Amino acid sequence: MEQLTLYTITSCIECGKIKSYLNKKEIPFEEINLFEQPNKQQELLNYTGDSIVPTIIHMGKVLEIGDLYNRLC
Image (cartoon, rainbow, N blue to C red; front, side, top):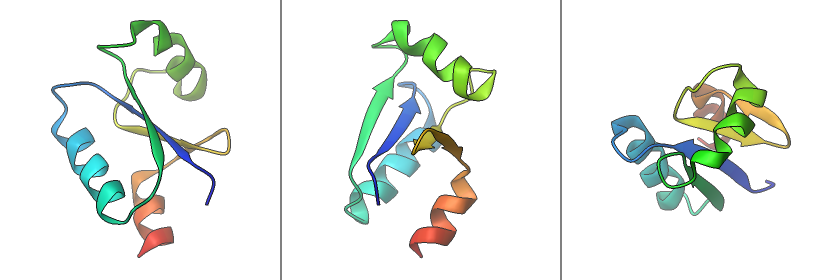
């Protein structure tokens, strides 16, 4: 599987759960924390039209959280 990009914010509980899941399954991902990298906000808006986190991007497309679980479980 090509590396995932995970958009997060520091205070997001669901973001932490997804990061833990990906680490547990040893799935490589790049985390973009929008609090630490606010310049990436527009990038997320281009994908989703909103500032929804957690958001996972795979091969240039938004990957629904349920799709991630289904593909990897």
